[in-house]
Length: 111
Length: 114
Image (cartoon, rainbow over all chains, first blue to last red; front, top):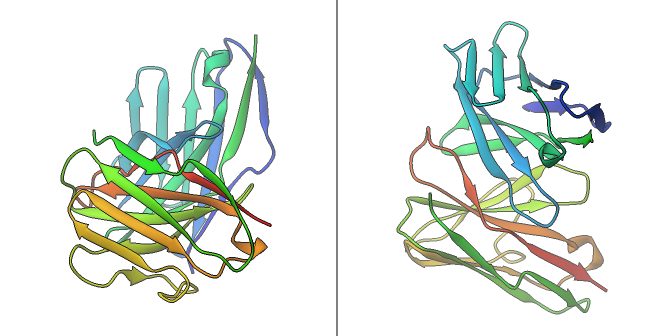
């Protein structure tokens, strides 16, 4: 079955630095991959979608890469701010309107 | 994007009882889904709510335990039946318009079963 791995350990970084989160997957070739942000007590919020034929996607301070050979996506937040502190979820589209999620990585940005 | 309202936001229920969670969307949507999120774990798809017909359940989830209704394109309910402490979790409603569009989520229902 499809498996998505995100670093279960929290990532602690200093304000202003670049945060890099990793998403690895196995046993599937998704047509696209998504990243979501989830704050405590809230539902996930969509951030970026990257397709299999795209290497990189940017939106403001966010950048996502997608390596279908390595089966890996990297999610970068540049010039990080304390307000970026949240859990970030990686999600794969597996076909037929089905999306599977990783467990997420918690990011803490210290002022 | 669609605005999704879920009720209740949280509840504490006794073992053996049932709870119905409502999901209301401010616009018509093609697809509605119900997910479960247990502490520290990923979101797990319970079922796809189909308008006017029986929901499509994922492996490990059955209609008798999680009956779902979707009477129209803006509303769905999920019932958690005959609850046990193992059902304590966050239940999330989500919607999607097209296969290549992102999911939008409600803020979830935090259920605690004692």
